Image (cartoon, rainbow, N blue to C red):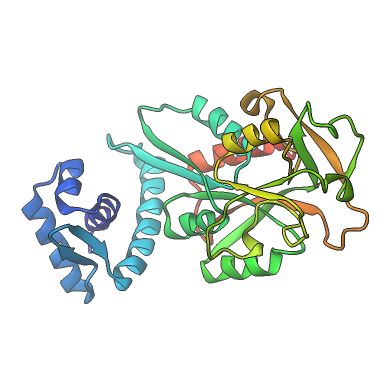
Length: 306
């Protein structure tokens, strides 16, 4: 088993085709096909199902891919540290719940690095996909929050996927709304005061549980609810129909604009704890890359936890 073969597996899985992978890798397709066959024979499993429409991973192949990504990731870090790396672009990705501070930190990280040297990716996505992306190696870092409600469920997922959560900051919940909202001038807002306005939340998929909600108090009885799947739509709904969401209150005016405010949430009469512990997840026992450390540093700087 050679490191090149592991890189071949990753490229084929990401492109869904031997032909596309061979073009990306500048390797002749027959050589690529033979190399994968030799690898499958050596390790005793079938990695890919082949068909006229392309290739898909087998169950064994999916597990192998996750391990291959970890090995290649660690290899790239060692190569960068001790040999200066090669000419191939290095990959770095993060997956996060819909946090403007996560995007802003990403922007500040990219400014410090050569975009010709790296292939960057940032994914604002569903909670379960944040976990799956880091577990599979698609992203190196995942940014999300824990609360007294979701902690046990998410920590169980972390353990089963060999992930480690590092807390960054604990904060109280805020009501996030546009500055023209009737409640925008309040010093604080209670749950009862919100009853006449639609609660906006990020869609987590048809089979998602309450534990994956990005908003605190996900089990509360909201008289009016609307789901969105991106931050821009949610901001438009705040203006258009006086919607609101419950969040950390850590927002980037530079990215979201100055038309929105975060008002402290008054949790009296609410049984569920409204505190949020925001942090990041990494694969256990994996050495973070230089880029990952830079990104974590920018997160800490923005959150004021250095």
